[in-house]
Image (cartoon, rainbow, N blue to C red; front, side, top):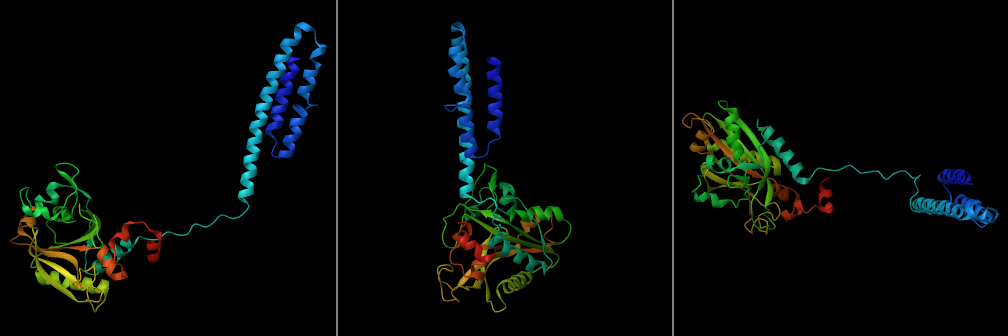
Length: 337
């Protein structure tokens, strides 16, 4: 009898695994576990066995019955899950196509800037976001005691390591790599400052540093470069002005402003109601910085500038809040795809 039960159980489980429909599952249950099923018939036949064999045989039949019932419940759930899936999703339908992505607005403006400066012979030089205090400040004419360090609210990683507050550390890296050749590079990248977030300022932003070093380079070369870049990016009718300023790594230093496209010079919150928007800080490379980069300031001169990316994009596309760039709102980003 035990051998017959073993064969019956094996046969039942094999046939159960091949079932894919509810009707076939119900038929299987009736065949093995129903009132007239094989297991029920075996239980009814216990009375024909000798009295001493009945307990053991009954226990064996009940164990087989429990295993089959458990397997039945498991298969029933699997078939129900398949049925629910087929009712909610028509798997024969073609998949929904995934649309192409698009470049972020900041990336698009960066590429436009690359193209403009490529016309003037500038090549791209990349520097790391995480910098040392030495490169970010000391070699740029700002020793530890220098008050000009307070111009940048800094994210410090450790006492000597920080997130760069500007792309200017790349000047030292580029000079030490290219020396003793002339240099004409732009250094794009993200900068980080611990500042209040407003409609016109973020704690992280892109910047494009520019550096040109050679013999007899003058402030006139810097002005011509900035005017050409502004008018290539924003239109030939743009007005550009230069204001005297101070940066510890340039002398003399200037700030470059352009008439605000958003308000047509009438004044708005982006330009602080002045009609002008600062697009770059610039100046002639300080002799100390030239020397720290390996160039003899008596033989070499150069200019440097730091050009914003988000603010020019705001001007170009009439965006009145810089915070849109980092909110990841697809409704905003898809407009520029």
